[in-house]
Length: 410
Image (cartoon, rainbow, N blue to C red; front, side, top):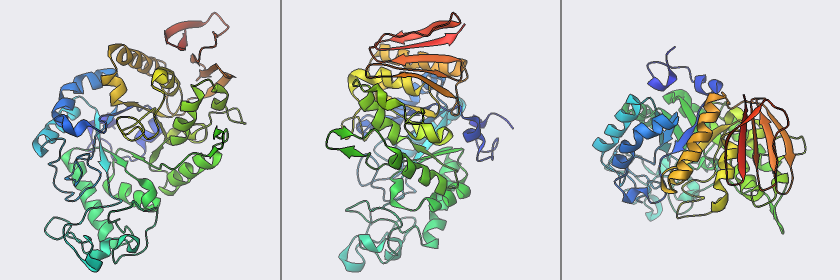
């Protein structure tokens, strides 16, 4: 078997990338990217993306959409979007293939904007475009004639009824077509909206090399802020992964929620009662896709932002720890050269020391102003303004910055 980065012809083994566990993802856009000739912009950055060590780039939704950001799709088979023409997209996909970085498609199949009015005077038919579904493709809870939704509703738009065989057949056909266009990985948008068993069927049908789902619901809060115990939150994400037949990873929203409180001087949050990391990373690291911010939580939407003066502590944590780390476009390309270089340095250490998604973690300190841990018995790190360094002459400083430091064995 060749390098799994080279495409479907080289690896039809669905689990190879998950087993290998050496991915580092780049989220290649933010909420405003559609304004900036995006496919062309990214194409210019591919050499730097590859050189930095990213294995996969998550691209914004490429299909025709009612909204410029791409999350209200209509004609799924039209690849002309506000991010650029089909031709520019294909040039980008070709460049990524040349540099052996996998393009990740953003799969928005919870809902779809209709083209014509049907049952009840709602826009719940899709006449005149490919996948010309009728009202039976839309859930009864969102104005269609299909079955009740198998998940949560995305309000205000027709939600797709995945329990219909014709719908699933059409979606698998479309996903296979995306694979043939050059997309290799999938990110499933609003995965709470439909049963994970359908995600399993879609992955088995289209055979992406790597998949990740956005299962995002609220963390547990009390009158004083975030609960210390987020086990029920991470359990829901774990259950979703399990229901995909373990074929998909999931974004570790639990770690995100805890880490952004921890860096404010509450590092005790980063050790659970069993002495493990408190997010999905602590329970199922090979399926936990860690991140600091994305186009919803950060960017100009800022629904749930990471404190901006602490992002390097965040990256020092996720890039040294197990799980599958993701770097956000804004931090890597818009926050200045110093941040870019610091992130690259942490990625280099991860690769050189062969830290992977299942690496062991031994937490040494988790106090108010200090967290420290040894990962894979090869890398040691601390974050917070408490002063600390490892005992033992075998440790040499590998990199450090504001409120973080990383050591490796010399």
